[in-house]
Amino acid sequence: MRYEIRVDGQMSDELTTAFPELDSFVVPCQTVLYGQVHDEAHLYGLLVRFQSLGLRVLEFRLLPE
Image (cartoon, rainbow, N blue to C red; front, side):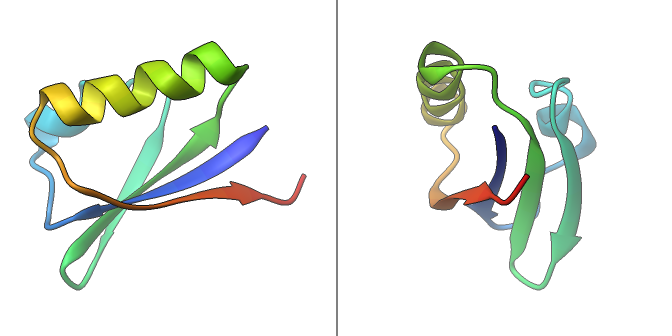
């Protein structure tokens, strides 16, 4: 499954390295991360990682294959 995750604000390069399995780009006022999520445990692990880094997730979206 491929997901797109939108985070509030512009993440620094250092913060994006906390998500090596995801690619990212910046749009006005948001950082967009996207990539393969292997299973539900991986998905929840990503959410915990965002939360532990103090990042506000605005949207989690499943992308078409």
